[in-house]
Image (cartoon, rainbow, N blue to C red; front, side):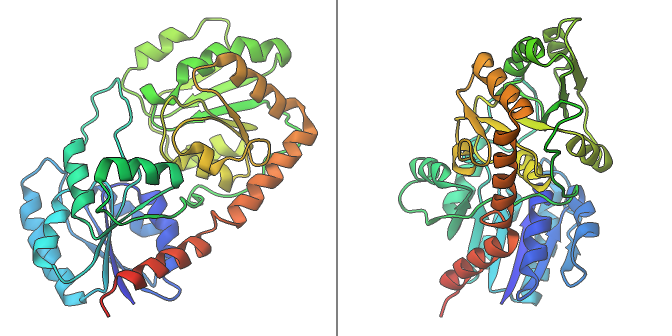
Length: 356
């Protein structure tokens, strides 16, 4: 079986997927200028082609798509598998009508935002999903959301978002010594940062040495700095973290907090699984599809700093519960979030779509 993968973003996800796929699939990947760094993490058996496609807003993508279509025609793939966020690449459907197109939709709708990120309009993302022969989402909740948004005509399949191993793997300490609580990723409205900041004094009453680390790229730096009082033990790192910094953040975290007010899947959570860190998540979107309460994490109501604080305190002080959840995280990452299992399921989908 010969598969061409195309992406704009989601490189961390694709690295693990492709490295698992290549064992019994001929894998080709098309990388734009913004994703060329993905190549250094790929199995050498994977065929990498650099399209030199510029940012989405550039008309230079027209020439890049002509080059890409010629390249793909030479390969003659059985499947073309894209990640959500591609727009220009959907034009390839005009040149390669006989090849099944699959689109992995990581987020059915855009996250709520306070910032001015340059992003593809929702209407174009919807069009891409409806144009595809099948779409993949990460969980049953997202399947329902996709069905409601894209209509019954879309073929929708569920495939788990596997662990992200690019930054390393490990197991959290059973007896915390640092009491570090990490909130990581792009800092925006849906992350619920405000509720973790409000929870910090409640946690500190029980655990004076606790430290909250909020790390990730943000545009509204002044807003988030203004939420933190001078006596709070909150370490704000509101800029993009390089790979080494991400690895260090997770290696030194005792709990990972996802106090989100809206969510679909979470790569942040799957990095945490790779490091064996017990998580606290809110009951929003697809997060409860991943976390089973008191088995591989704790689930709390959204926008509730009191319950968030209680859950974090439990994971830092209740050693029996902490042990159970760490074991559950390890079982999850070796089970349904293992890439060999995920790759086998996706390969089965490919076989269903290839014309006989």
